[in-house]
Every structure is written in structure tokens, then in C-alpha cells.
Image (cartoon, rainbow, N blue to C red):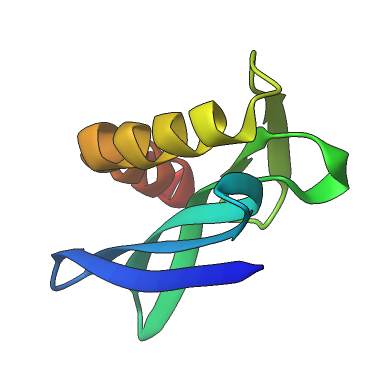
Length: 104
């Protein structure tokens, strides 16, 4: 098995953490998480992973409750690609929604 792990800065206060495991070229598990830096802490906002045996997105609220949204594919390579692209394209929108909930 091969582990790939990296952290990618989107801004000084926003980052994407990426980790996936492959075996013979096939994705076996992954986590891709968008985090924002608030009040001295990195706060998870959106997480895609394969915990619980299926690919899904966790929308993490400021009170640490989690909304779990299953992905429409069971192909882990496809799900990983989608997760990476979604965070790259939509992290600012996710941050705005998170901060709006935090202020409420």
C-alpha cells in the first residue's frame, strides 16, 4: 500500500489537507478536508472521506455537529477526484456559510 499525504495552502488562513491510500494503483481510502483558521485554531469545515465504509461528505458546523452526505459514486478514485475539485472550487463558499452559522 502507498500513502500520499499533503497540506495545500489556499490562503494564509485556509488550507486543504489531503490523504489517500492506494494499492496496485486503486484508491482504497481517502480523506480530503477544508479547514479555516479562526481564533488561533484550524477548524474543519468540509471533509470528504471513506470512514464508515462509504464515500461521503461531512459538513461540519461551528457547534461540531456533522451533516453526512453520501456521494453518488462508490468508485473511490472518482470520489477522491470529485472531493479535491469541489474543495478547490468551492472552499470560499463553504467558509462563508460556516462563518454565517458561527455568527448566528
